[in-house]
Length: 293
Image (cartoon, rainbow, N blue to C red; front, side, top):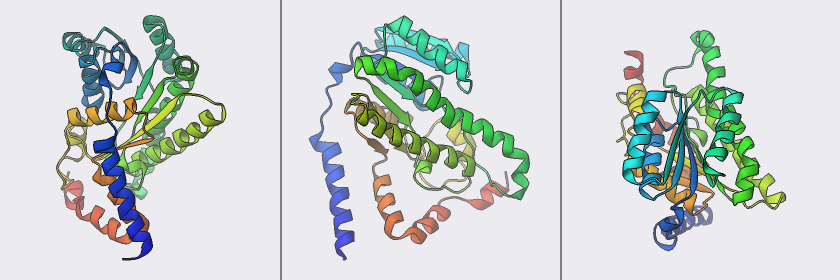
């Protein structure tokens, strides 16, 4: 084994040991924290809201569906949230980003943690016939990328005051191209570029705001199952356990969270054996299932 490969194995082992054993979380410190959770009406966002509620946080939840948000808010109260507010919004609009932050600051007297989670998904071939889908791609950038930038930018002043955290829920599709996700993967790559650069800008301005980017695999949310459940030949991961991993990484102010952690290994394989990883990705995505939909 070459020196580079040995170094990669050592680095991966160190990462796993540090994140699992060495780095404990003081969850009691999250009690009373002022948290904004985007995309909280279902899936991972809903589970994140519930987990923060169990820890006694104060929470603002947002998504498009007002009635569903009310149901989530009611359960958050039952689980122990100190305060819960729901603000139904279309986050693809710039004015919604400003309203979300202004109302959250008014309701909770500030923000400690901003969780950016809402997405517009995609799972299909992108070919010459996709010309008619270009408007869809533009909409996806507004939801998956630009809205994250808008909301975070409006929140920076308030997070600066609290020394708070930005938690960006992303995907492995932001680290490498995944089959049948071309526009979605593009939005996630852009998301990583912006927030990794923002982290540098915060450093140079001597800011105490942390930026945690969460790199996720296939999660068993309803939307993921509808889009890709019959075409991806890998087990789907628990949304609840994913939410716990996200909250943990944000509390530790980690640069990146990988769930499952084996995704870190895939990145090393991509670095040294990219064609091999391509073949693995293609094996686990069923083209025939896509074509027969």
